[in-house]
Length: 282
Image (cartoon, rainbow, N blue to C red; front, side, top):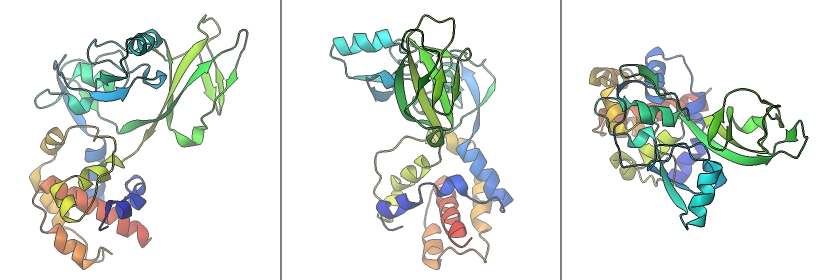
């Protein structure tokens, strides 16, 4: 754990952490899938997540236009010599005390905006692969490249429009809508992962003291300041105070834990240590 290269070995450990500690499990659920309030329709942010302009970004919401990116728009950007574009994301939403409906909808890749005042759950779902499927004339099905064992959800787009019905994906077989005249579809694959939190820890002050070196990674599903406001300081203090004496965490790590100043960072670091060492000891 003295280097990020060592920490990265444990990337999947937060996805398989145990549930015996009720308080720690509750904290993990709050951190990894927080429920936040929609406080306004559009925060008007000028910040966005930079994406390379390829057919893989079809369906993402373009920051400059507020419109889902279509194949035609991708062709237009490339023809104009534009090779990067900013997309909407909850990580760059600037609403105070919550999130805006526009960024929330973009995060879930849906055109349906939640109402102001509604509570939305921010899921740590990240794109892992994408492919463009060309359907030959009169074909009733085509074979996909991506196997279902590498993703948890597949979303199909037709010229920027997210299709929610009329097609099927079974294993590596894609059956397009029967009545559609479209011959090309973009299929984007998503998976749930908690690994970005390790990257976040590596980029913190405490992470640098540990000698952790952050590698390029996806940002947290929600900005740190808002995440911090969702968790009471007393809860974080109690979590750290209740480290079981039977824990397999080495003493030097527990001593280091006591030196971390940020309550949220301390609790996240504890969560990582518990996941690593509790799993290691079975």
